[in-house]
Length: 376
Image (cartoon, rainbow, N blue to C red; front, top):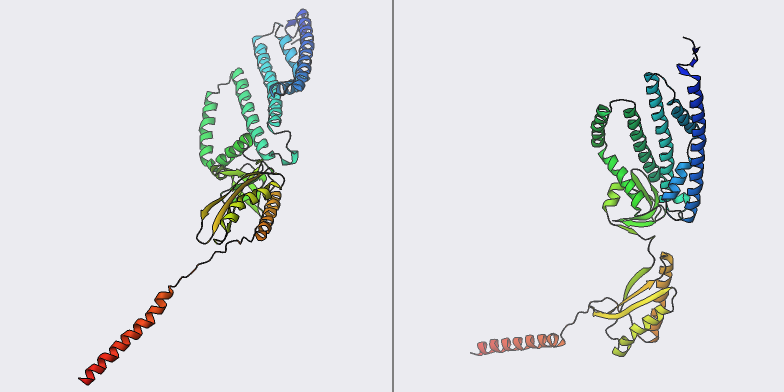
């Protein structure tokens, strides 16, 4: 077979090849310039807005591969050359592959940027949920690649119905076998998206309490106050009520104290105001109420409510300690005694005195009866 015969080069005229080369060159330059222009404009727009869509699109366009653009332009140019039907089919398949690859690069970059935007930029990078983020990226990328692969195969004439059916049956079998693992994996994704807590948060779940150290694909690890590591599956963790103290803006404090029943009514009426003045001298706090609420078994009981306007636990304990000490000083200065739990046994003195007298009278009557019997 001759390469050049009767003015034909590879079964096409020289004019056709020149036309294809010209179209490929112009097409590549236009596509490259268009991508650069759109990327620049969208990048400038993303810097002026707070939305994530323009950031994602700009980043995706920025990942355009120049080599794929060149191949795309060449294949479009070759479509204008009169070639055999078999070669045309190969060119169509190659074009589908090139488009699929470029879409894969765009979507891969878009997923990465979108995940980065989902993560709070104010969070310390060392505290980000890397495991959950990696899992989400992997699943999304896998789904995108499988979708593009099936689309390319379908465009190439491959019957993918049986392939998809087998994937579905196999997926069900795998899901049943890995039910627990998949449940924890989905729970990990739910934690990553919904963010009920993050690494560094102090949480209480049932009888567990500690600082979140790591959120994995299957388990979440806490560091307890005593230092040991607590590990719990993500599924079981989300089934319970989670108390997240890291996100608490202020702390409501309720405490009580009791004074003795011997406290004069005048002093009792002043104690609420005394407690209020003590609390208002503390910073940063907001006083709510202080009331004499009930008559206890051996005490007169008060209840006090105030707010610490800072979630720090050590600050709350310092303030509460100061309040307790000042309250003791104020009560001592007024002669008010705190109640001590006690039980009082009261014995009626009349019963104690009457019992011996009755016994003596009964004995005297018995002696008299015996004497009368002897005399008779």
